[in-house]
Image (cartoon, rainbow, N blue to C red; front, side):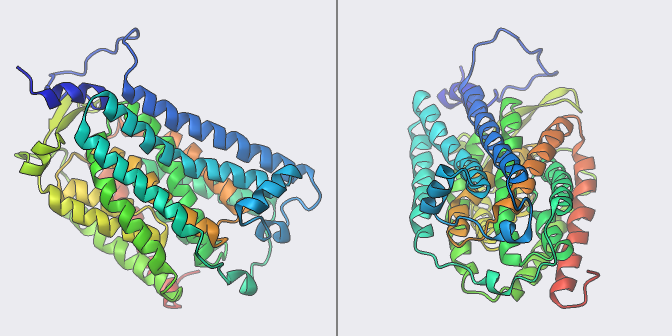
Length: 439
């Protein structure tokens, strides 16, 4: 006879029973709560995308177009956005779309709480309620932050349609890689915006927060429906990442901006090391649940199309993973990268989840982590809409591409992609921050 928590897992998670092959999909199967959460993510992405595209069309048709002045003079408060919407100002419409994107992972958390309540899972109702409360607290903290002063020293040579398109193309690449290996896109976007386009790193971090949410919402919608994501693992660990994200965002205002690049690079180099030591591993072996994993029903299974079978797995060293998630949250708020590297490390290296599950669950979590700090960056005026718009659209397209690739990609190939990308970016950022970089 199955334990009660195993029965509950069939709603939000796939069954933990081992099957020799991937079961055939039933086209007429009843809708599950997992599908409901996937629809919320997908609906938020589609709605925000439509509003952003509308704002861009208004920008193209109105005088000024994609000028440097329009790119960096924009509404920075809710009152200014409201007044701009009444006047159909392009930047205000784009900002509305970006705010809808930021709200998507928050709404997803609220929907998850309803889902757990439907399952009568009181433990996860409480966990989800705490995560939601932390996210709402971040909204209050954002209202008290002072504006950044980077606009006084902005020295960009130009901003035009060609700049917009180049940022879009770079964001597609970042979104594809970010969704594929669970990094969130910011790993590539921060160097791209600072080293190539000369954006101040405070602005690059603010825009990168948007890319993280876009990657998460776009990729997680597919991964949740495909049963690659461990929703319970993600929700439990979000307790640590959201608190860490708020801590990191507040810390960012106290540190000299010149330190960001060095911290960014060192963090990435450290994060690569565990993947090198297990370069050829396909699946973890000999793992058994620890006490906390048993208590929280964290073990599950996922359909692996590359191996052509259902893969079951268990979870270990859960407390250590939780501590690592707090550190990941601090890094996310400080650097705007989603800290997907540390999330994947915590789940893959410490908790010993399969890399595909770690990547998919990381994609679900990074959006919530980023949302905890996004409002603070918004209140500082660190999210210019004409820069964030091509980033959001490009990353969403890249996330769509990445989700199509992940289920048919081996865990070994994911490591091959992950290691050189992160290593190269890390060295470039460190050298640039020290004044000896190639750019």
